[in-house]
Length: 391
Image (tube, rainbow, N blue to C red):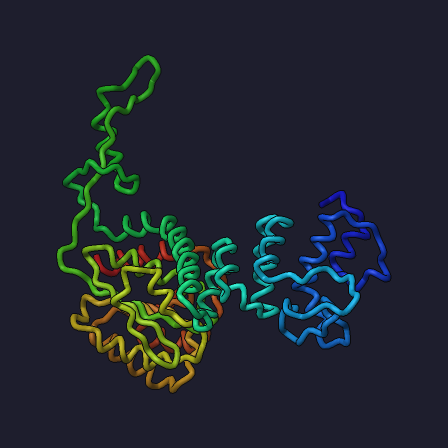
Protein backbone atom coordinates (compact mmCIF):
# COMPACT_ATOMS: atom_id res chain seq x y z
CA UNK A 1 0.00 0.00 0.00
CA UNK A 2 3.05 2.26 -0.34
CA UNK A 3 1.60 3.98 -3.44
CA UNK A 4 -1.77 4.79 -1.81
CA UNK A 5 -2.81 8.44 -1.79
CA UNK A 6 -1.72 9.97 1.57
CA UNK A 7 -5.22 11.40 2.04
CA UNK A 8 -6.71 7.91 1.71
CA UNK A 9 -4.17 6.57 4.22
CA UNK A 10 -5.14 9.27 6.71
CA UNK A 11 -8.81 8.44 6.14
CA UNK A 12 -8.04 4.85 7.07
CA UNK A 13 -6.19 6.04 10.17
CA UNK A 14 -8.81 8.54 11.32
CA UNK A 15 -11.90 6.62 10.25
CA UNK A 16 -15.06 7.54 8.38
CA UNK A 17 -15.81 10.38 10.78
CA UNK A 18 -13.01 12.35 9.07
CA UNK A 19 -14.93 12.25 5.77
CA UNK A 20 -16.03 15.90 5.95
CA UNK A 21 -12.49 17.16 6.63
CA UNK A 22 -10.72 14.73 4.28
CA UNK A 23 -12.92 14.19 1.22
CA UNK A 24 -11.33 11.90 -1.34
CA UNK A 25 -12.10 9.37 -4.02
CA UNK A 26 -11.60 5.78 -2.88
CA UNK A 27 -11.62 2.57 -4.85
CA UNK A 28 -13.99 -0.23 -3.91
CA UNK A 29 -11.19 -2.03 -2.07
CA UNK A 30 -10.25 1.12 -0.16
CA UNK A 31 -13.87 1.58 0.87
CA UNK A 32 -13.97 -2.01 2.11
CA UNK A 33 -10.81 -1.36 4.14
CA UNK A 34 -12.39 1.71 5.71
CA UNK A 35 -15.57 -0.20 6.59
CA UNK A 36 -13.63 -3.15 8.02
CA UNK A 37 -11.47 -0.89 10.20
CA UNK A 38 -14.50 1.16 11.24
CA UNK A 39 -16.35 -1.96 12.38
CA UNK A 40 -13.75 -2.35 15.14
CA UNK A 41 -11.97 0.95 15.69
CA UNK A 42 -15.11 3.06 15.26
CA UNK A 43 -15.87 2.04 18.84
CA UNK A 44 -13.32 4.66 19.93
CA UNK A 45 -16.11 7.17 19.30
CA UNK A 46 -18.55 5.42 21.64
CA UNK A 47 -19.77 7.69 24.43
CA UNK A 48 -18.57 10.84 22.65
CA UNK A 49 -21.91 11.81 21.19
CA UNK A 50 -21.06 10.33 17.80
CA UNK A 51 -23.55 8.15 16.04
CA UNK A 52 -22.35 4.61 15.45
CA UNK A 53 -22.64 2.67 12.21
CA UNK A 54 -26.13 2.65 10.79
CA UNK A 55 -27.02 5.82 12.69
CA UNK A 56 -27.04 4.07 16.07
CA UNK A 57 -25.28 5.13 19.23
CA UNK A 58 -23.07 2.20 20.11
CA UNK A 59 -22.55 1.33 23.75
CA UNK A 60 -19.17 1.69 25.34
CA UNK A 61 -17.02 -1.39 24.90
CA UNK A 62 -19.49 -3.18 22.66
CA UNK A 63 -19.16 -3.95 18.93
CA UNK A 64 -21.43 -2.20 16.46
CA UNK A 65 -24.84 -3.80 16.77
CA UNK A 66 -25.46 -5.85 13.63
CA UNK A 67 -29.14 -6.04 14.47
CA UNK A 68 -29.64 -2.25 14.50
CA UNK A 69 -32.08 -1.11 11.83
CA UNK A 70 -30.94 1.61 9.46
CA UNK A 71 -32.69 4.94 9.64
CA UNK A 72 -35.52 5.42 7.11
CA UNK A 73 -34.10 6.66 3.81
CA UNK A 74 -30.53 6.07 4.99
CA UNK A 75 -27.80 5.31 2.46
CA UNK A 76 -25.59 3.71 5.12
CA UNK A 77 -23.89 0.46 4.06
CA UNK A 78 -25.29 -2.86 5.21
CA UNK A 79 -24.11 -3.80 8.71
CA UNK A 80 -21.39 -6.41 9.04
CA UNK A 81 -21.62 -9.46 11.23
CA UNK A 82 -18.51 -10.68 13.02
CA UNK A 83 -18.03 -13.68 10.65
CA UNK A 84 -18.34 -11.35 7.63
CA UNK A 85 -15.85 -8.96 9.20
CA UNK A 86 -13.36 -11.79 9.78
CA UNK A 87 -13.64 -12.76 6.11
CA UNK A 88 -13.12 -9.14 5.07
CA UNK A 89 -9.99 -8.48 7.11
CA UNK A 90 -8.43 -11.74 5.94
CA UNK A 91 -8.99 -10.75 2.34
CA UNK A 92 -7.84 -7.15 2.77
CA UNK A 93 -4.79 -7.36 5.07
CA UNK A 94 -1.62 -9.47 5.37
CA UNK A 95 -1.54 -12.20 8.01
CA UNK A 96 0.57 -10.28 10.53
CA UNK A 97 -1.83 -7.33 10.37
CA UNK A 98 -4.84 -9.62 10.78
CA UNK A 99 -3.38 -11.08 13.97
CA UNK A 100 -2.88 -7.58 15.41
CA UNK A 101 -6.44 -6.56 14.54
CA UNK A 102 -7.89 -9.73 16.06
CA UNK A 103 -5.82 -9.19 19.23
CA UNK A 104 -7.18 -5.63 19.50
CA UNK A 105 -10.72 -6.95 19.00
CA UNK A 106 -10.36 -9.26 22.00
CA UNK A 107 -8.09 -7.34 24.35
CA UNK A 108 -9.12 -3.74 23.73
CA UNK A 109 -12.75 -3.98 22.66
CA UNK A 110 -13.92 -7.20 24.28
CA UNK A 111 -15.30 -8.63 21.06
CA UNK A 112 -15.89 -12.04 22.64
CA UNK A 113 -18.02 -13.18 19.71
CA UNK A 114 -14.67 -13.97 18.08
CA UNK A 115 -14.32 -16.95 20.40
CA UNK A 116 -17.92 -17.77 21.32
CA UNK A 117 -19.54 -17.96 17.88
CA UNK A 118 -18.93 -21.24 15.98
CA UNK A 119 -19.11 -19.62 12.53
CA UNK A 120 -16.51 -17.08 13.56
CA UNK A 121 -14.24 -19.64 15.19
CA UNK A 122 -14.22 -21.73 12.04
CA UNK A 123 -12.88 -18.76 10.08
CA UNK A 124 -10.07 -17.88 12.47
CA UNK A 125 -6.50 -18.98 11.84
CA UNK A 126 -5.14 -20.84 14.90
CA UNK A 127 -2.27 -19.03 16.64
CA UNK A 128 -1.03 -18.40 20.18
CA UNK A 129 -3.00 -15.21 20.70
CA UNK A 130 -6.22 -16.88 19.58
CA UNK A 131 -5.52 -19.87 21.81
CA UNK A 132 -5.07 -17.58 24.83
CA UNK A 133 -8.38 -15.91 23.99
CA UNK A 134 -10.11 -19.29 23.74
CA UNK A 135 -8.78 -20.27 27.17
CA UNK A 136 -9.78 -16.93 28.67
CA UNK A 137 -13.38 -17.07 27.40
CA UNK A 138 -13.89 -20.84 27.50
CA UNK A 139 -16.45 -20.56 30.32
CA UNK A 140 -18.64 -18.43 28.04
CA UNK A 141 -18.69 -21.04 25.28
CA UNK A 142 -22.06 -22.70 24.95
CA UNK A 143 -22.97 -25.64 22.72
CA UNK A 144 -21.06 -28.57 21.33
CA UNK A 145 -20.39 -26.89 17.98
CA UNK A 146 -18.60 -24.00 19.72
CA UNK A 147 -16.54 -26.37 21.89
CA UNK A 148 -15.62 -28.50 18.87
CA UNK A 149 -14.43 -25.40 17.00
CA UNK A 150 -12.44 -24.29 20.04
CA UNK A 151 -10.92 -27.75 20.43
CA UNK A 152 -9.75 -27.63 16.80
CA UNK A 153 -7.90 -24.39 17.49
CA UNK A 154 -6.33 -25.77 20.65
CA UNK A 155 -5.27 -28.96 18.87
CA UNK A 156 -3.61 -27.19 15.94
CA UNK A 157 -1.63 -24.75 18.08
CA UNK A 158 -0.61 -27.47 20.56
CA UNK A 159 0.54 -29.74 17.74
CA UNK A 160 2.67 -26.97 16.25
CA UNK A 161 4.35 -26.37 19.62
CA UNK A 162 4.80 -30.10 20.25
CA UNK A 163 6.52 -30.62 16.90
CA UNK A 164 9.02 -27.88 17.73
CA UNK A 165 9.83 -29.23 21.18
CA UNK A 166 9.32 -32.97 21.43
CA UNK A 167 12.50 -34.26 19.82
CA UNK A 168 14.82 -32.12 21.94
CA UNK A 169 12.91 -32.77 25.16
CA UNK A 170 12.82 -36.53 24.67
CA UNK A 171 16.48 -36.56 23.71
CA UNK A 172 17.45 -34.72 26.90
CA UNK A 173 15.47 -37.04 29.16
CA UNK A 174 15.77 -40.43 27.51
CA UNK A 175 18.89 -41.34 29.50
CA UNK A 176 22.62 -40.82 29.91
CA UNK A 177 25.01 -41.72 27.11
CA UNK A 178 26.33 -45.28 27.39
CA UNK A 179 29.85 -44.88 26.05
CA UNK A 180 30.41 -48.67 26.06
CA UNK A 181 27.56 -49.47 23.66
CA UNK A 182 26.56 -48.16 20.26
CA UNK A 183 23.14 -47.76 18.75
CA UNK A 184 21.78 -47.93 15.18
CA UNK A 185 19.69 -44.82 15.95
CA UNK A 186 21.26 -41.82 14.26
CA UNK A 187 20.86 -39.00 16.77
CA UNK A 188 23.25 -36.06 16.45
CA UNK A 189 23.45 -35.54 20.23
CA UNK A 190 24.68 -39.17 20.63
CA UNK A 191 27.47 -38.90 18.03
CA UNK A 192 30.64 -40.81 18.92
CA UNK A 193 33.06 -38.66 16.95
CA UNK A 194 36.21 -40.35 18.24
CA UNK A 195 34.86 -43.78 17.37
CA UNK A 196 33.74 -42.49 13.98
CA UNK A 197 37.25 -41.18 13.23
CA UNK A 198 38.88 -44.47 14.27
CA UNK A 199 36.38 -46.51 12.26
CA UNK A 200 37.09 -44.55 9.08
CA UNK A 201 40.86 -44.02 9.26
CA UNK A 202 41.29 -46.84 6.76
CA UNK A 203 39.39 -44.73 4.23
CA UNK A 204 41.81 -41.80 4.42
CA UNK A 205 42.62 -40.47 0.92
CA UNK A 206 46.31 -39.52 0.97
CA UNK A 207 46.22 -37.79 -2.41
CA UNK A 208 43.39 -35.42 -1.50
CA UNK A 209 44.28 -35.38 2.22
CA UNK A 210 40.70 -36.09 3.18
CA UNK A 211 39.03 -38.59 5.44
CA UNK A 212 36.16 -40.31 3.66
CA UNK A 213 33.51 -41.14 6.23
CA UNK A 214 31.58 -44.28 5.36
CA UNK A 215 30.42 -45.29 8.83
CA UNK A 216 29.12 -42.94 11.52
CA UNK A 217 28.90 -44.28 15.06
CA UNK A 218 26.39 -43.23 17.73
CA UNK A 219 26.34 -44.09 21.42
CA UNK A 220 23.27 -45.69 22.94
CA UNK A 221 21.68 -44.27 26.07
CA UNK A 222 21.18 -45.82 29.49
CA UNK A 223 17.52 -46.55 30.17
CA UNK A 224 16.28 -45.47 33.59
CA UNK A 225 14.51 -48.35 35.28
CA UNK A 226 13.03 -46.75 38.40
CA UNK A 227 10.70 -43.90 37.37
CA UNK A 228 10.86 -40.41 38.77
CA UNK A 229 7.76 -38.49 39.76
CA UNK A 230 7.46 -35.03 38.19
CA UNK A 231 4.71 -32.81 39.62
CA UNK A 232 3.83 -29.79 37.49
CA UNK A 233 1.98 -27.22 39.63
CA UNK A 234 0.64 -24.49 37.34
CA UNK A 235 -0.68 -21.05 38.26
CA UNK A 236 -3.64 -20.41 35.92
CA UNK A 237 -3.99 -16.69 36.61
CA UNK A 238 -4.47 -14.62 33.46
CA UNK A 239 -0.88 -13.35 33.33
CA UNK A 240 0.42 -16.93 33.06
CA UNK A 241 -1.37 -17.84 29.80
CA UNK A 242 1.78 -18.56 27.76
CA UNK A 243 3.25 -20.65 30.56
CA UNK A 244 0.01 -22.63 31.01
CA UNK A 245 -0.01 -23.51 27.30
CA UNK A 246 3.64 -24.60 27.23
CA UNK A 247 3.23 -26.48 30.51
CA UNK A 248 0.40 -28.52 29.00
CA UNK A 249 2.53 -29.43 25.97
CA UNK A 250 5.52 -30.19 28.21
CA UNK A 251 3.33 -32.35 30.46
CA UNK A 252 2.09 -34.34 27.47
CA UNK A 253 5.63 -35.02 26.27
CA UNK A 254 6.90 -35.99 29.72
CA UNK A 255 3.91 -38.28 30.30
CA UNK A 256 4.94 -40.22 27.19
CA UNK A 257 8.33 -41.12 28.66
CA UNK A 258 8.46 -44.52 30.43
CA UNK A 259 11.01 -43.26 32.96
CA UNK A 260 8.67 -40.57 34.34
CA UNK A 261 5.39 -40.44 36.23
CA UNK A 262 3.70 -37.06 35.73
CA UNK A 263 1.14 -35.27 37.89
CA UNK A 264 -0.48 -32.10 36.52
CA UNK A 265 -2.09 -29.66 38.96
CA UNK A 266 -3.54 -26.22 38.18
CA UNK A 267 -4.61 -23.62 40.72
CA UNK A 268 -5.94 -20.15 41.38
CA UNK A 269 -7.74 -19.86 44.73
CA UNK A 270 -8.76 -23.50 44.33
CA UNK A 271 -6.79 -26.54 43.21
CA UNK A 272 -7.70 -28.86 40.32
CA UNK A 273 -5.86 -32.13 39.69
CA UNK A 274 -5.80 -32.81 35.93
CA UNK A 275 -3.39 -35.74 36.08
CA UNK A 276 -5.85 -38.01 34.26
CA UNK A 277 -5.36 -35.78 31.20
CA UNK A 278 -1.59 -35.34 31.61
CA UNK A 279 -0.87 -37.19 28.36
CA UNK A 280 -3.41 -35.11 26.39
CA UNK A 281 -2.49 -31.40 26.19
CA UNK A 282 -5.73 -30.57 24.34
CA UNK A 283 -7.93 -31.89 27.15
CA UNK A 284 -5.65 -30.26 29.71
CA UNK A 285 -6.11 -26.85 28.13
CA UNK A 286 -9.84 -27.32 27.59
CA UNK A 287 -10.06 -27.95 31.35
CA UNK A 288 -8.15 -24.80 32.32
CA UNK A 289 -9.87 -21.54 33.21
CA UNK A 290 -7.53 -18.55 33.08
CA UNK A 291 -8.01 -15.78 35.61
CA UNK A 292 -8.90 -15.57 39.29
CA UNK A 293 -6.84 -15.08 42.43
CA UNK A 294 -3.77 -16.94 43.62
CA UNK A 295 -3.26 -19.26 46.58
CA UNK A 296 0.13 -20.90 46.02
CA UNK A 297 0.41 -22.27 49.56
CA UNK A 298 -2.80 -24.26 49.18
CA UNK A 299 -1.63 -25.66 45.83
CA UNK A 300 1.77 -26.66 47.20
CA UNK A 301 0.11 -28.34 50.18
CA UNK A 302 -1.99 -30.42 47.82
CA UNK A 303 1.08 -31.37 45.78
CA UNK A 304 2.77 -32.43 49.02
CA UNK A 305 0.01 -35.02 49.47
CA UNK A 306 0.96 -36.54 46.09
CA UNK A 307 4.56 -37.24 47.13
CA UNK A 308 5.30 -40.91 47.93
CA UNK A 309 9.04 -41.15 47.31
CA UNK A 310 10.52 -37.71 48.08
CA UNK A 311 14.04 -38.57 46.95
CA UNK A 312 12.73 -39.39 43.46
CA UNK A 313 10.25 -36.52 43.18
CA UNK A 314 10.66 -33.20 41.37
CA UNK A 315 8.05 -30.50 42.00
CA UNK A 316 7.98 -27.71 39.40
CA UNK A 317 5.97 -24.66 40.50
CA UNK A 318 5.16 -22.39 37.53
CA UNK A 319 3.85 -19.07 38.82
CA UNK A 320 4.42 -15.33 39.04
CA UNK A 321 4.77 -15.90 42.83
CA UNK A 322 2.18 -13.19 43.58
CA UNK A 323 0.77 -14.98 46.62
CA UNK A 324 -2.71 -13.79 47.57
CA UNK A 325 -2.93 -15.82 50.76
CA UNK A 326 -0.67 -16.06 53.80
CA UNK A 327 2.99 -16.29 52.71
CA UNK A 328 3.78 -18.27 55.85
CA UNK A 329 1.72 -21.27 54.71
CA UNK A 330 3.61 -21.29 51.40
CA UNK A 331 7.04 -20.97 53.00
CA UNK A 332 6.31 -23.63 55.64
CA UNK A 333 5.19 -26.08 52.96
CA UNK A 334 8.31 -25.29 50.95
CA UNK A 335 10.46 -26.06 54.01
CA UNK A 336 8.71 -29.39 54.60
CA UNK A 337 9.06 -30.49 50.99
CA UNK A 338 12.71 -29.54 50.84
CA UNK A 339 13.54 -31.25 54.15
CA UNK A 340 11.86 -34.46 52.99
CA UNK A 341 14.14 -34.59 49.95
CA UNK A 342 11.83 -33.34 47.19
CA UNK A 343 13.63 -31.36 44.48
CA UNK A 344 11.92 -27.96 44.11
CA UNK A 345 12.03 -25.64 41.10
CA UNK A 346 10.08 -22.40 40.80
CA UNK A 347 9.61 -21.02 37.29
CA UNK A 348 8.55 -17.42 36.77
CA UNK A 349 7.73 -18.40 33.19
CA UNK A 350 7.85 -21.38 30.82
CA UNK A 351 7.79 -20.16 27.23
CA UNK A 352 9.23 -21.36 23.95
CA UNK A 353 10.59 -17.91 23.10
CA UNK A 354 12.14 -16.69 26.33
CA UNK A 355 10.63 -13.33 27.24
CA UNK A 356 11.04 -11.06 30.23
CA UNK A 357 9.24 -12.65 33.15
CA UNK A 358 7.15 -10.45 35.42
CA UNK A 359 6.94 -11.85 38.94
CA UNK A 360 7.00 -11.00 42.61
CA UNK A 361 10.74 -10.70 43.18
CA UNK A 362 10.41 -10.50 46.96
CA UNK A 363 8.45 -13.74 47.24
CA UNK A 364 10.78 -15.46 44.77
CA UNK A 365 13.75 -14.49 46.94
CA UNK A 366 12.03 -15.86 50.04
CA UNK A 367 11.26 -19.14 48.29
CA UNK A 368 14.90 -19.38 47.23
CA UNK A 369 16.02 -19.07 50.86
CA UNK A 370 13.61 -21.90 51.75
CA UNK A 371 15.14 -24.40 49.31
CA UNK A 372 13.44 -23.71 45.96
CA UNK A 373 15.58 -23.00 42.90
CA UNK A 374 14.14 -20.05 40.96
CA UNK A 375 14.43 -19.58 37.20
CA UNK A 376 12.61 -18.63 33.99
CA UNK A 377 13.17 -21.30 31.36
CA UNK A 378 12.16 -22.51 27.93
CA UNK A 379 10.74 -26.05 27.77
CA UNK A 380 14.03 -27.25 26.28
CA UNK A 381 16.03 -25.77 29.15
CA UNK A 382 13.59 -27.26 31.65
CA UNK A 383 14.14 -30.67 30.06
CA UNK A 384 17.91 -30.24 30.41
CA UNK A 385 17.49 -29.20 34.05
CA UNK A 386 15.30 -32.22 34.76
CA UNK A 387 17.84 -34.50 33.08
CA UNK A 388 20.54 -33.20 35.44
CA UNK A 389 18.37 -33.66 38.53
CA UNK A 390 17.13 -37.18 37.77
CA UNK A 391 20.41 -38.61 36.48
